[in-house]
Length: 573
Image 1 (cartoon, rainbow, N blue to C red):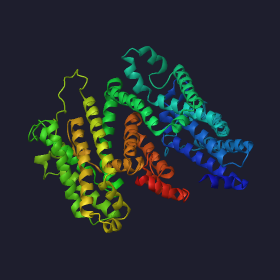
Image 2: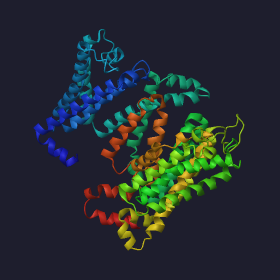
Image 3: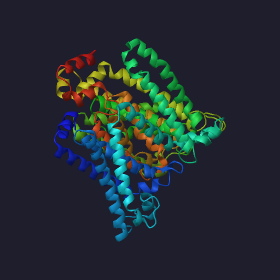
Image 4: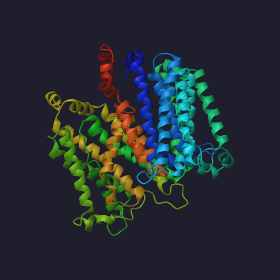
């Protein structure tokens, strides 16, 4: 709903109150869902701030606050109407939870809702025994949370943002407290780590310290008007300012595997591998508009080529160095790109997606088949793939750390190549094909050559990712070649922003890095993954970091007519 339509709805009180009721009912459905799928009781065992609040309780608190905030925006004009609307929406959500408690006392819900357990009702009623005696607590809590959400909406922008930044900071630091605490305990900051972080989550002192630090930083940011000053800087001065910040960020990235341990190194190495594949698919899909759902095939070709050429096991063919095997892996992937591209050059749209999906499945089946078992090892795969650099166990480059640096270096080089390709004549030809193949051909674009190059280069990037993957795992298994790899890569490109190189990087961090860091919530991490995808497609369909072309395609109709030619001219230059 646009700002104009919201204002129009709020000018009609009956419609506005209907919107408030709908917000309350949606919040009630979300709260019940969080309870019955087990998020509240399971996460209730994981403290965010020790002895104060758990993640399960936070999920309900966020639901109540958001319902009050949104309802206050939907309510009729006026502060009192906003407070009443937020309170009503929160009360509705809490009342449904109260009804859920009463229903569970009258009917045995656990036979078909296993998560409707005593632990859940203890959380909802703050430990009331029996739970039915505290059935009124969720309704009262929803009322208060809805009121607080409405107050948040009515606050001035700086105060509202200050509260939101603090809440998000507490949530993020509390979630990843274990990752930060463990390396600190082995260094000079062990006492500070015990003061700020509990074994899980934050201590009360740590929570207060984070609020003080974040509040001070935000108020300084606003008081010094940093954002406005940066916008007012001349372009050259702005670029000169960003260079030191970029260097600091680079030093942090280089320090991560040494300071945060091998788990973070492996997670970031996996992100870098998906960045490589995402940059490859960004050429075929983001620039040329060729939807390839069999992209995992090129990844598999690169991985198996390196494994065959470097393995010291029974399936090794040459026993050569990783660095000599990588060029062969890239060339083999490019050859398969041509092999796939030539037969399907005349296919478009959904038919192209189905054809490429079939190619990916064929490669996966062949890798598992008895036909190629003497060569590829069948279901057992190829073992004993040596790491790129032979190191001692005590060496700092041992394990996934070396793959971390290799993957990051390769991702940086490939990102530079992709950036140069995007602005080249070939890149403009890909964009022309994406918009309209017939018009592009009429303008002199060689469709066969241009499409084939898109498949070749995209396959080369994916093959490089597969080669590094083989060195990271130390083996290649057919189970690694599955449809979900292609879907993940396609999701990275779409969520990050099709045609956008920074978007691919950000999409890989969000869709690959966050699920890896949330492995302790393995039962629910893909549920959150799906929710993020749905919210993204609803509220930001152009992607997290879209290219200027992608942004214009999605929102060009909302821009003033005079602005479009100017933007088009800027893009051309």
